Length: 366
Image (cartoon, rainbow, N blue to C red; front, side, top):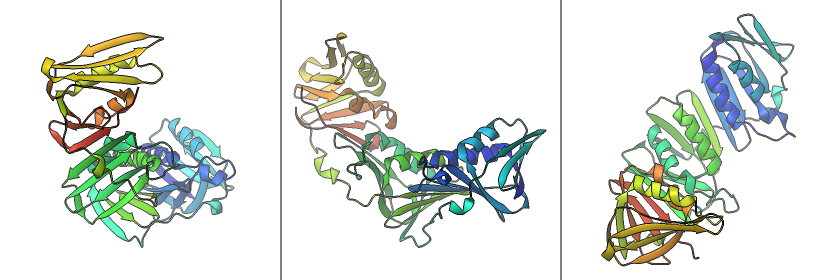
């Protein structure tokens, strides 16, 4: 194999591929990037649960295949100062040359590299806005469980319909939902993407330039095609909770406040929230009070009030401060509305001008 390639192009592809490589020492090939120079240059990596294939333009002088450790290769390319790089094989190893510099990287037999399946027989094919997928996943990602004991809770639910696409995630303590309209060009489908794969998908899509991406799904995997990049990941075979049933339809107390004021109030309270990370919200409509309190035996206590338009009944209720603040960057609205449905009932937060986003948080007993 011998090819001449632009440094920035090969580095960008190598960095994306490196994020997908496996960490199993018993299978060294999983820590490698596979280069295949045929009619084009293909760069692949996999950890057996997800995989990526990136096609990069290059001057191909000799075809071939080779697999080298991803981290060593990307570090080598980063250290190069010239605009172009020559990659070639030498005694089954990879040689990287550029402007007087020569580096030899020990290769691993490429025959051991797993075959990636690209779902050509996918049962469901859709075309959806690339930016919508990025926004949708980022809007709910933080609400998914980091544990896979219950795989459906450690996943992002994506439901694609003709008029809209819905993203949802929950760890049973809070729920985030983002509905984006006019984002689907064709097709329908519903699937659960594990949290770690969803995060990698966002990283990959952010580096794309196309307007729409194609998604193929089967019973066991998801394939996303964008520009010259293909990403494949296992999907969860499970049933996502029917969360619509737990979202309150009416509220006993409501408050409308500026999002930044609320975020700043929680930032101050976090210092005093202690190991339990509790914060109390106190809404007294008749007195026109909206305040937050936090206390810790080791640090002290604090109470802070902000301007709010409040109505309904008085309420004192406690929450985990992290759960209460995680949604802030996901909501596209300067003002937010908090709907309280009772002392032991969930809080629903929506944007005053962002009807597509809903965030539900369960209260804590103290």
